Amino acid sequence: MMNWSVILSISRTHLLSRMKQTIIAALGVTFGIGTFIILVSFMTGLNGLLDGLILDRTPHVHIFNEIKPSKRQPVHFFDPYDDSFNLIHSVKPKFRGEKINNALPLMELLKSDDRVKGITPAVKAQVFYSAGMLELNGLLNGVNVMEEERLFNLEDYIFEGIPKVLHQTSNGILIGKGVAKKLSLTVGDNVQVISSKGDLFQLKIVGFYQSGLAEIDNVQSYVNLKTAQQILGEGDSYITSLNVKLHDLEEAPRMARQIERGYDLTAIDINEANAQFETGTTIRNLITYAVSITLLIVAGFGIYNILNMLIYEKMNDIAILKATGFSGRDVKYIFIIQALLIGLSGGVLGLIFGYFVSLLIDHTPFVTEALPTITTFPVNWNPMYYIIGIAFALASTFLAGYLPASRAEQIDPVEIIRGQ
Image (cartoon, rainbow, N blue to C red):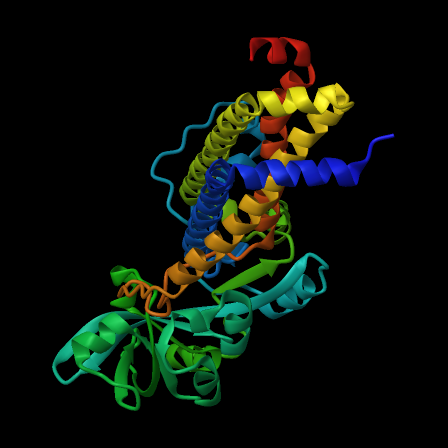
């Protein structure tokens, strides 16, 4: 019967007697696993940041009334021409206006759908920002502010002020940074806007909005939904778009098709709106995981080489063990346990090393005008990466130790002693 306490004691003695080789082997595991943790945490954190910039502000389904030519022209309704090839030139778009008819009942219907997490109405108003003789072209987004914050993280793009203040201020405006900079405006100032009908409105600045895209920040601002309706001279039912957030992103294409078929509206799902972005995200993730796996494999080969040399140096010990009654299987387990001990100690140190370097990265200042609410480098603290790291440390050291240990199992002690 195998005496595990004796085998464990011998394994520990071997490791301590060759402390230099043991430390080198453990450090190989430590830096392999530590580098894996640092790289995958930072790269996935960065990818998550880039994804969030797009996905947080993009509705899963965007519903609006698109100005486009009618698919069925008058000739299509004339029966004698059904079997003919009809060629129509200079087709003009049908003007239906930007308003979504029956938007409020449609909102209630969508809210009752189990797939829908939330829905926000929006009104876009073309205006001019006025300052004396200076007029700047602008776009006001009228939204339900608190729902916009809950579903689309509006506060992450506000670098001065909070959404709640805008919600509580009927004539408030969350103005784009580019506009504020050009007009030298600060929070608390008043800004005049001129509607497309020529009406003048005075709004109070409650904060600054910055998307990170200069083309947007130079024109776009946020106001309450009712404020935008008043600027356009419309009633409470006037809504130009609906932004839907789902529980499951994968349901977006199917819901968009259902809405287009059932309500004669244009519905664009998030995959269609961000096709190029999705491709870039996939490529970045593939590169991240490919490099991370390569690091782990390289660390595994280093461990194998060290353990192989360790067993070569222990030939005399192996001969003595077998001569004193230890079986070949006992010898194999002795060296496998040594490998696992190296993997466990090196892996734990690697996790600690990776954690503290990731913590340092997470506290390193990262300041850019494009991302005003981001102050440090992004790090993904997913515990699964640490579980994968320690699991690979044990698995790689086991495999790295198994092959040399199997060779040690076959060693004939008589040949070793005779060679001495």
